[in-house]
Structure formats: structure tokens, C-alpha cells
Image (cartoon, rainbow, N blue to C red; front, side, top):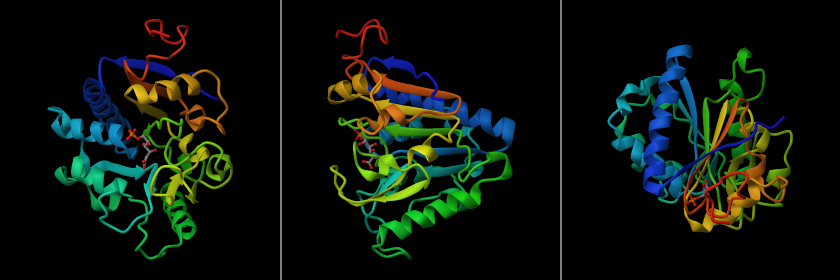
Length: 261
Ligand SMILES: O=C(O)[C@H](O)[C@@H](O)[C@H](O)[C@H](O)COP(=O)(O)O
């Protein structure tokens, strides 16, 4: 059953990124205190990278024990290693290169010049196997129970590389699939599926800017997940939408009383 989403609206996207970074520090520190380690799933896109850049600047960032943090990705653009458009390349630049992570805990999705070559479906299956190998008996499933899984929301309501009506968003068995013909470039991508996303304790959806206002309103107003994939992204114990005022501007009053719509 889906967890009712909670909304937090910030003045602008800079404040949203800073507040989300502070929230993430607390989550990771708490998870490490109670379980010894933490796992976070990163998202590509401007908002996800904005959050990582804010985390790099956050005074409390080193409260995190970086060596006991597992990083996974929600999706990846299937491009050669080091390509500036790859989500992992952008995350490295925004934060990862400046913190003492354990490289064996940084689980980048495969590149198009990796061991699976240009076969994105085999690459996706390999990432699913990596997730399955990391899942312990306590996870009761094919992926670890991630502490926090973050997703940028696209103007068409896509999350990760789950685009409206494409086969990936209909997947109910596999945890990771290859995507062909994505409307956002590049067309070939690797993505977690909704069942994998829903394994997370907390799912945070990030939306900033006026171009996200309609998507947020649709996804939060009872749309179906095939037409509006963001509507199907929820966590086991918490689903949190982090928005700026522009992205919240078309929300129904019942959800966000100060919205102008
Ligand atoms: O690889 C990608 O492009 C993404 O992971 C994608 O799902 C992104 O998060 C959204 O499109 C929002 O992107 P913005 O934050 O840039 O709007």
C-alpha cells in the first residue's frame, strides 16, 4: 500500500537544495548510528546535482562517515565511462570526488563501453545482480532496503528513466531494466523499476521550477503510475516531495493551502 506523500515547500531551489542536503546528512548519520552503515540512491538531473553540490558545501557534511555509505543510482544515461552527460560523472564532480568514500561502495551503473558493450539490457541485468548480491536476509527481497532514494521529477512526470507509457514503467518483476527510445536524451538508459524504488525506506522526490508545477500537480492528484510515473514512486515508511514555491504553484489547495491555483 502506498504511503501518503508529505510535502515540504521551500522559497526557491537554492534553499530547497540546502535544506535537502541538511536533511540527508541527518538521515545518513542516524542510519549509521543505528545500523553501522547507510545506503542512498542518487538521482541525475539539475535538482539532484544541486543537492549534492549543497552537500559538498554543508558545514556538517563530515558528520557522515563516508567510508560506511553505499551509493547506488536510480538511473543512468547509457554513455561511455567518463562522459560528461553520465549521471555518475556529474555526481563525482558535484560531490563524490571531494569526500572519502570507499570506492567499493560506489555502485555506478554500467557504461556503454563497459564489459557488456552496447547491450543495455545485459548491462541492466548486471546491475540487478549487483543489487541482489548486496541484499541481505534482513532485506527480504532482491534489492537492499535503501535508507533514502532520491528522484528528480521531469516535466512529463518521469522519475529515474521511467517515462509515461514506456515499457519500463510497467515492469513488475525485474528490478533494473534497459530503456530504449527515452524522450529525454540520450534515448538509451538504465533504470531502477518501480518495485525496486518501493523497496526504499524513504523516497524523496525533488521538483523545482515552474516547468515542474503541472507534473507535481498531476502526480499528487491521484494520477495512475503508467501515465504519471512519479505517482508510483513511494517508500516503505515515507514519501517526501521536496519542492520550491514555483513547482508547488499549481498544487490543489487541499494539498498545499498557499498554492495560487
Ligand atoms: O538522467 C536523468 O536525466 C534523470 O535521472 C532524470 O530522471 C531527472 O532526474 C529528471 O529529468 C529531472 O531532472 P532535472 O532535475 O534536471 O529537472
